Length: 128
Image 1: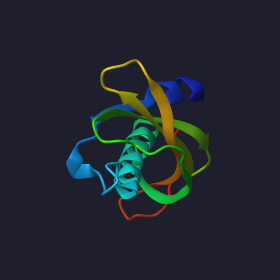
Image 2 (image 1 turned 90 degrees about the vertical axis):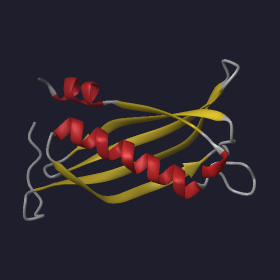
Image 3 (image 1 turned 60 degrees about the vertical axis):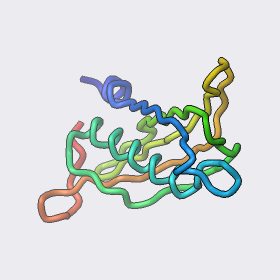
Image 4 (image 1 turned 90 degrees about the horizontal axis):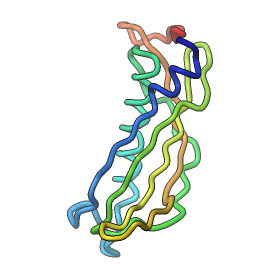
């Protein structure tokens, strides 16, 4: 399988409903909750690409472009954007969908870096 095919096959989409227990006093999704969900989607994407043990080593510039209101559906989309010897980067975008209309817009974007590790938690080459 080519690298491009692996990137395509590892693309990850998760949908969530934004309920009041995940929102702040402005009735929008907590930023920390959004970041946790993004890291989870990035981890799944990295693992699906490499099929190895992966750990987050950094998050690069997370841009909150729009608040995410309660009572909306969000889609988190993860895609591998870079691969190195032992590391890779995953971009995660969050899209807001209104529940009862076709309206959809990008709300948050960020990139996460992962390293492949062995059973001793030492970096190892990503198999391609």
